[in-house]
Amino acid sequence: MKTPFNKLSDNARVWIYPASRKLSDAEVVEIKKLCDDFTNQWTAHDSSLLASVDIPYNRFIVIGLETDFNSASGCSIDSSVHFIQSLEKQYNIILLDKMNVTFKQGEYLTYKSLNDFKDMVKKGSINANTVVFNNLVNDLAGYKSEWEIPMKHSWHSRFIK
Image 1 (cartoon, helix red, strand yellow):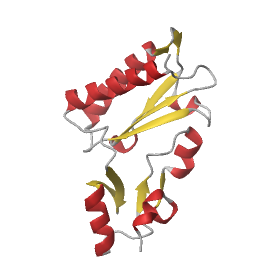
Image 2 (cartoon, rainbow, N blue to C red; image 1 turned 90 degrees about the vertical axis):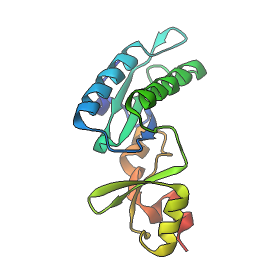
Image 3 (spheres, rainbow, N blue to C red; image 1 turned 180 degrees about the horizontal axis):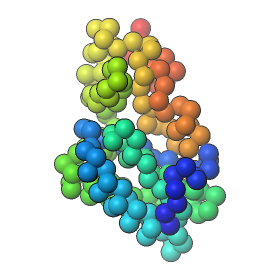
Image 4 (cartoon, rainbow, N blue to C red; image 1 turned 135 degrees about the horizontal axis):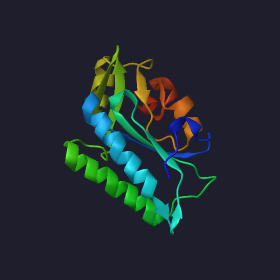
């Protein structure tokens, strides 16, 4: 069942999928509709799941699941991954490649391979204060406080010398 994203509790589970490119406003409208359809029918062992999707910056697809209502099962998580794969195909974007980093350069978001990101750190074009997106957060509290942070406070800090 769909619920507004801002109504999820802080312990709601989140999955963050960074897009390989910025989505157009029209694509975001279409994807939100597809996400609404998905969350309205999403179940675990024939029990409804209370979920929502956010698309911040037209760059990320964030699925939130209210675990206090019902938790996801292996099969329901698989169905969400299949849904994300269908979005990748339909919109010709990459969402599931975890070997990429999204970070801010001024007001712009940049999406780079992990190797390119490391090279940029070495060259000094990215530093400890560069805002990165920590897509490893797994609950809404972390999403609110630890997702968009300076590199020095993220797992990305291991690349700083």
